[in-house]
Amino acid sequence: MASDFGDPLNLGSDRLVTINQLADIVCGVAGVTLGKRHIPGPQGVRGRNSDNIRLRRVLGWEPQVTLEKGVAETYQWIEDQVRQHLEMRRCCELTRHEALTPQDFVAQTSSASDFVQLSLPNPSSGGASTATAPGGGARTSRARRCSAA
Image: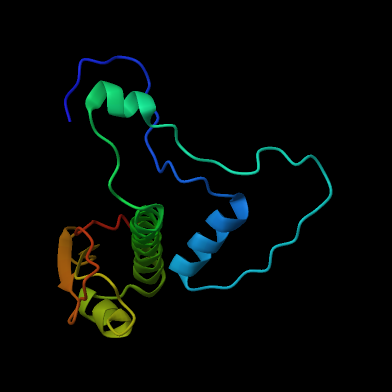
């Protein structure tokens, strides 16, 4: 959305949510149950919400995504980034310590893998080889080169 407005605008859910409620939303998205322990101390703000009055006035627009949907999409994005990072670290460790070929790596990791394509260094030629994991699901990552030194 283009605008010439140069000042900050609040952008978020105008629904008042407590920290406990936000924690419950995130836990629900993550599929986990966590106990909450309240400790003595200053209470601070009891809840948060976005005041979108200026947003509506300036842009004539307001968010249409619910807090739950936004948290779910953000959580999924973060989880995908972490998985990709961990897979790359595992790839580099396996390649570095065990001198696996791309085919061996795919054979060892394809059952638990969430990626579709991964570029690995080819020790024999000094270049990169591409290994494709069979059965890549909805989560895919960009092919990356693992720099095993």
